[in-house]
Length: 307
Image (cartoon, rainbow, N blue to C red; front, side, top):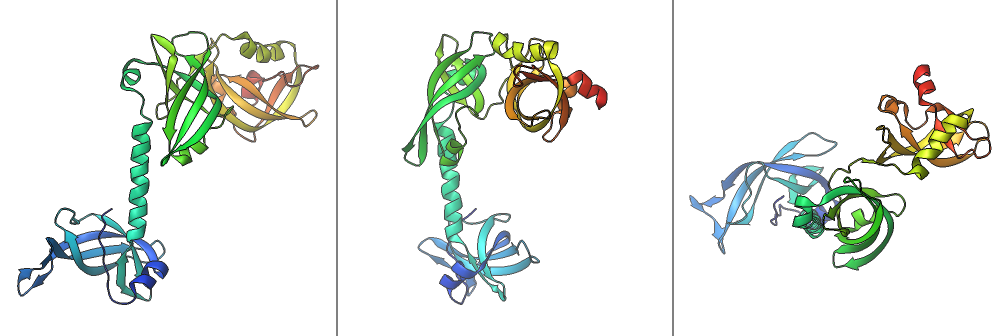
């Protein structure tokens, strides 16, 4: 988006505060002339812009606007502006400099946040990728950004034992808001020579980590071996980027038990062939321990047969 003040007759203040907002594209750029000479002021040239204004709820219309622009930031055909216009007189159009400035500031903040949160070059090049689960976070304002000091549960793709590590990352406020202990999972990169040195790699796809932890693998397996039949309704589900040695990926699933109406969350391994059956609202056959209904597994073989 280009800037540049522009005023066409009428009250500029009223138009900018009460006019309808739209995107306008420059379709032609001419120099304004007087007696055949280009008009300039303080090294700024006066341009005659042909613009196509595209309201969201009305037909596009063409306008001509004239104003001075710096020789170093003159608009070109195809450039777009936020504008305000008078719906009762579409010849009255004003570039919405406040909206442009706000968008530019947001873009600059986003670029600054991306640069500040970039993974260190050595870890980006040779760090071991892994799955990070947010255990704790402390957030402090740092200029336009938020400094996030995190405790992270780490599982790496090299098969090393899971561990905890600390790292910091500056983020924009909107992104920082989404980091929630016990819920947020993201990619990490760990120093091959010092696994305690990690960096959050928030733009990188999270790898699926194969686990051999009996505390995670045994409950659903035991429910299938020893459990009594029941049914569950899937209320919510989310991937965990963990998998059994057989390649079944785990999902955190909030379920409602048909037999007593209780609701709770379980970690369930799901075969690749049954992933399409796992959706919110689905009713699935299950098995659970009679003494502890929260030890539960979906009977995927029965679910596939029914499907």
